[in-house]
Image 1: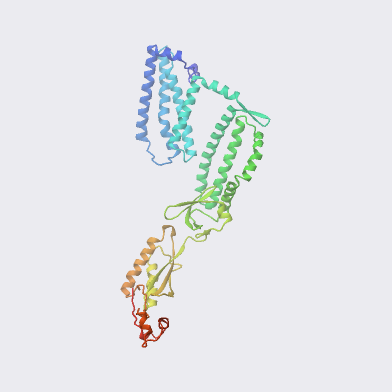
Image 2 (image 1 turned 120 degrees about the horizontal axis):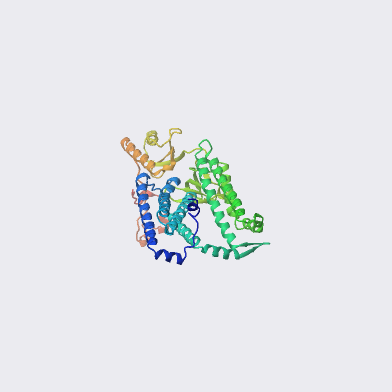
Length: 463
């Protein structure tokens, strides 16, 4: 029994002669058929279990535990059934085990791959199914290399290729393992940071901006710690990084200065509460609501669905109009024109009532109407009112107010004026010779300067 478990996952050299021996014996074909039956049977049973006991989460980012359980049902069943089949095979026959052990190793490797990819998908929100399948294929290639023993040759080749770094030399194998180890450490750090970030953002007792600051600080610290822990694990001395320290400093001072400025500005605007999620901002003529604050930019979304990515340093170095800094309500206005001779106090009262009837209009401060001027065709009336929820837009609200104004003014007999224009013709065009007669000794130029309109034909037109 001890030998059975000791050699359970021991690597064998599945070379051509061993496979040929298996194909030349009846027991080898029976074992291969048994492996195929186990794969098909466990796959069918896993599908039935998932369909009956595990609900289908069709969201873009399903729950980590739910997604992990769905992915592990088949490899766990395959691992258990193969292990039982191997045990029974060795008890009932004296034939060597080849295909069952290969299937057992593949089931274990499938289990490891699916756990790793599920954790990676949870840590990286934009980890798509295509990326998951591609990485899974790479890992299966690594499994085949390990199984056949070709990995030893590749590892020795990579170790023989070394790059000089300062006074030391780093092999290509060390660099690749460092990248893999650092990547794994970063994934673990991102996964842990997402859990901590979710708890921080759900802490309602803390200010919203403080929650964003804490979540970003925790994420940054975890990533730095992960890199500092991962590099020594693969034999990379951290003092060797001092070679790149000067170059990195120069790069930050010149090429990455803007990125560093945006990153620092992101913490500043979160710490001083100048910009918060949900605020209505006006920047360079673009008005929108803050939907997301990242380390580099702030996302503004307007009522038409367009989104603007504003760099963080814009909020520190430039003037930004925050229309909801101290209050979420917003003032807006409407104008109408009434005819001369209108009862202005009545028109103003009806104009104010039309706005006060709307549920979205604030009661305090109450809407107010004013006379703003005497125009060519009528008298201008101005309505000012405050809105409780400006994020819903103003087109529907303004339409409802103007429609109510139309009905109330029509019932009260208040007239909306049409544009009017008066045109006067000072004289008719006549024969120039007639101006030289004795009856009219004046020159045409002198006649045009006459101001006696009673002797000139005139007409008035209205439109």
